[in-house]
Image: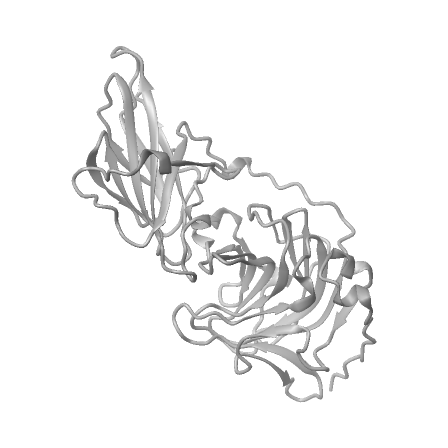
Length: 382
């Protein structure tokens, strides 16, 4: 029988202060004293249970088994946290779709709720990055960051695994069993601070246990993340309108949108146009965006782009020079090397540009689960 150590809680003004100063002392949570410090939306799905065969209590997260429903809990004193280090342990008690998400920089505003997530999957034994944009995961955009847990780190159902989760200056790092080497370092989520917590698998899945947390100030600098292998520098710049709840009178011809409503949208560090940061999922089902890009041909003799190449998990409608060219996208994952990847080449639509200004308009259907972005480029024959 395992006997849990009884922790002495450091209860002080630092403990309840909603800022990173709360981490001047180590916070210890063994779930032997209830969930008063945790935000619980459903006591049926976020609860403390007794570990079989002992008097030890653990945090149990149980999926709601309803499409799109989320089971999560946030640590109340962490609303303003920026940098932190958290260690603990987790266990998947049952075979099946076991999932543990580590939430960071959770921000809930009037218009939307966004938060970073790194998650561990028990069946398959891997780690993924999946920031949630207004509640919609985004793992289809970050498949290059996926790492398999193999050898001593392989997830075994019914056994405890150790973890360390560190966030420093926007870079989230997750360690599993080996506390000296991170499985994943991820720096592509934009919130600068916010709450921390845990989530079970959205929708259907198996329960997961968490226990013996130690949370303190991060005493390390942010690791360098090499994004070069995942980067595509596009030759297009984009503007956007939306999000809209329905299409804006488009069809065989491009929609007539107000010129003054176009605004710039910048790519992330990889060159991805992250449309999930704009569309609304949980806050109102406004999932349609229109984007446009314009380029000039100064003379009829200069080299002309012949195709637009796109990689997207979302469906995209494309118009060129005012006329519909086709629908592309719907891929399982988005790949930054789509111009050279023979296995995941994305899609291409032919273009017939003319001298003067040429305009591309794309409609993004942003309601696909775990998607929300695309790579795009013009291709010119050699």
